[in-house]
Image (tube, rainbow, N blue to C red; front, side, top):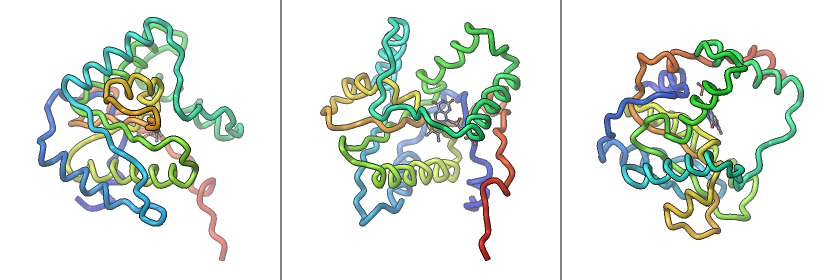
Length: 220
Ligand SMILES: Cc1cc2nc3c(=O)[nH]c(=O)nc-3n(C[C@H](O)[C@H](O)[C@H](O)COP(=O)(O)O)c2cc1C
């Protein structure tokens, strides 16, 4: 697949087929992803691939935590500050998505149902947790962001679909417990990976992008 095609036809997929991913395909995808650049070749991250029983146990623990009212406790606090023009884009995305799904914004029940799908990896056979050691800062996060971006695009080349999910990093203690990780490993973000159920309405949603002139500026 052309790189441009892979970039342009990637989008967040929120419903997957139950089909498993072949071991060779998964391995190839991870090896391609690992060519991603890092500051001074630090490669200061880990990629935890969860499947089968481990993934099921994590989902079970996530859902139990949510049902018991446990507060989200991400290793990296959610961002409070967004300038108003950015907040507007975020609100517009929510309105467009719920509109597409024909869910009334006031329908808390239905919104919760959709939200919970995050913690079930949207039905994908594979979950990926991107981990970083505690104490690493902006530059390592940048490296990790490039890695995740590479992963999302490389997945398309294997015919796979993805979605990056902050929600999968909302209860990092659950991830650490299930993976037997030391406390020093922080959960930066999660990604669901699999074959998309492209006929499902949720996957027919295409998020907009703002005007190019708001983002790209030429200085001749
Ligand atoms: C770091 C990051 C975290 C995200 N977290 C979530 C999430 O928890 N749940 C979700 O449904 N989408 C999540 N998304 C998906 C974004 O909403 C999506 O990328 C954005 O709306 C653009 O749409 P597209 O990916 O289809 O192009 C996340 C994306 C990124 C990059």
